[in-house]
Image (cartoon, rainbow, N blue to C red):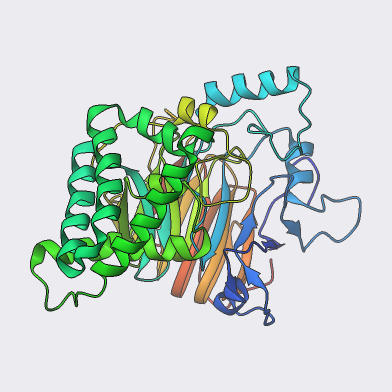
Length: 432
């Protein structure tokens, strides 16, 4: 491997980030690593300076030690960051800026002399951050995009009516929620969200009462067995369960009011969710593989103890409303190709390929491979290697072929070609 033109298949050692919302030992158990008891949230594969992947095959210190080193020496930035997520608790409600917003916000905070590592910093780089996540198992749950104010109001009013049928003593709680519904329908969605998130001494008491009221109403609704309830009541169980779960971790967090206005999505294994910049979202539970632009710009809207800037968040948020639907990939043999932004509208294009048997990929940029289960033979040019569960490789040449059984993911920038046939994998595999 030369500094100027590294070739072959470079085995990686990746950082596992431990956040409170992760699953105890979640990444390690899923990928077959040494057992861990602490919450593991994310595994990062990429060149981002926060947690760059280590090149395990670097023989000397004269060679690049991390993908960040390789990126700097080559002068070419990787257009993506690949992650595996283990979500045990709800993440913060958040949205990410466009390229223009990130560039302007970064410059403004630099001019204000806000340190890059300051807790109240909103923009830590000049990149946009579109994201796509693929569920590794059934039941990956997320909040994504706003419902219409009318739909949210109708759902919350139904929550009130159903709870009152269970317990007539909840009239005061229902009245508080009805008042919030009137704000939703008589004012703009943006106004309602800003009202919920801004710290205001005049409305603090009412917001506290509103959050407690939602908890009481949700608890009453969940006492109605969904299999015995009318269809209209069954639809409320999802909202009631969400409110109860969020209240356990953040009982007085106004982000719960925002969460009540978002669509909840349940993904099956292999289904994906596409999140362009500005999309309000929060992952709730499950395992997934995520690809995004290499950025750490996050503006939060609740369910967190971290910094919240409602006014800046409102500049970034897309308040358009409608249903949230899984992203539809292209099926190639038994594999799936996820290409959410082929024109590069939001950022430099990136793509993800889910491989379960045999696949050949040719990309414009270097590729990254992560084996989640099973075993695969990898080939790139004259180089061969056997990759087992938990193994990951970097492919500087941008061309790789896989053959085996299990589940693997190939990440890259724009891909020239993806096929379900391989030509290089003949005979026994050799070391890369």
